[in-house]
Amino acid sequence: MNTFELRAKALEISNKAALVIAEAADAEKLAEAQRMLDEADALEARAKMLDAVEARAKAHEAAVERLPVEDTVVEQRGNVDASADAFRSYLRGDIDSRELRAAGVATEAGGGHLVPKGFVPELIKALKAYGPMNEGGPVTYLTTASGNPLSIPSLDDTNNKGALIAEGAEVDETNVAFGQKSLGAYKFTTGVIKVSSELLQDAAIDPEKIVREGMAERLGRILNEMLTVGTGTGQPQGIATGASAGVTSAAATAISYDDFVKLLHSVDPAYRDKAEFMFGDPVLLAARLLKDGEGRPLWQPGMVAGAPATILGRPYHINPSMAGLVTGAVSALAGDFSKFTVRKVRDFSLKRLDERFATSDQVGFVGFGRYDGIVTDSRAIKKLTQA
Image (tube, rainbow, N blue to C red; front, top):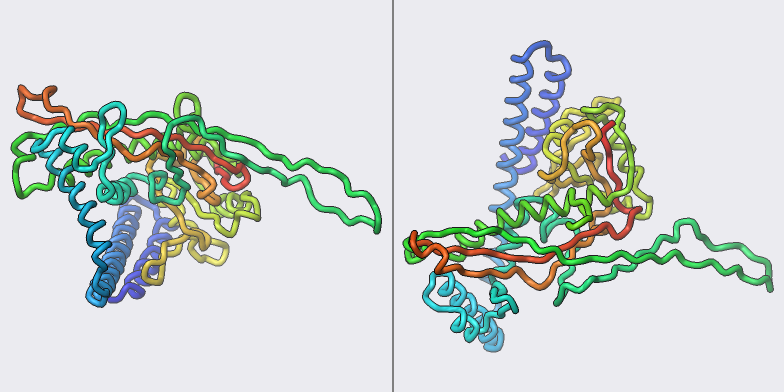
């Protein structure tokens, strides 16, 4: 089956599962419905794999047709490769910090090394797996050279409007409602990742991949958590904290079709065209079982290669740090998530710890980064709170 057929089949099975759940009288029927949903998920996964295969084939075709690269570009690429090679040697312990600096890898005042350019895109790609609040997600990332407080101007001119006046009449003066929000720089760390010397010295093992994946998981989880539910006091203001009140659900531990509709319409019309949803996996499961009055499912799979699944026709993001269907919890968000700004100070830095674990013949790696986040426009992002 092609991707369209796979997604159509997944939708058909999901609809059947919803009917089974609605009429279920015992645990056996519910288990049958869960198996059907698992089958639908497997079909969707196959469709995504086919999407990836097609994209890779197109990329290979483009590479074959690409024109020869100019000498100047080759030289620049050579410099990047040299820095990357030096960084890998540093991870293995073949060169020290002084030699790494000589190879062109930037150093921070505290002694850490800013990871080379080639490391950053792969780190960002890995971070995305641990939540949508990480770099590469729907929110706005702003990188600065220092950690000084950064003022972000805000504008709320909602209550003002133009006027119809007579010829020659004076124009009234109305102040524009400018505001200001400040972003700091909270320090995050991956904690120490210990790697055996044997593993680092094995020529078949890529030390950069080991360190990158270990740090991406740790940093990705804590960043996504703080940028989602952070209180704003001594830590970033998370998007669920900073979002404006939109809707309170009718039920304490459930969510309805009407709740989603009301949440979407609580977003200011100026931002609604770009509005998307964000919630955790328990809410997605509940949403996949909802239907409108005509029996049409609220959840729809993407029917075209590369198209996302939707809720009310809007894309959604699964955020593992958001609360589930719990009394008083913020269970879902809707809006233009680009109006949440994350401030990042420079790039991620890394230190190698040789002596600390020398007695066990291990090497430690620890990474650091500075971040803050804030909702810059209260009209753009709204939250659904359980009753």
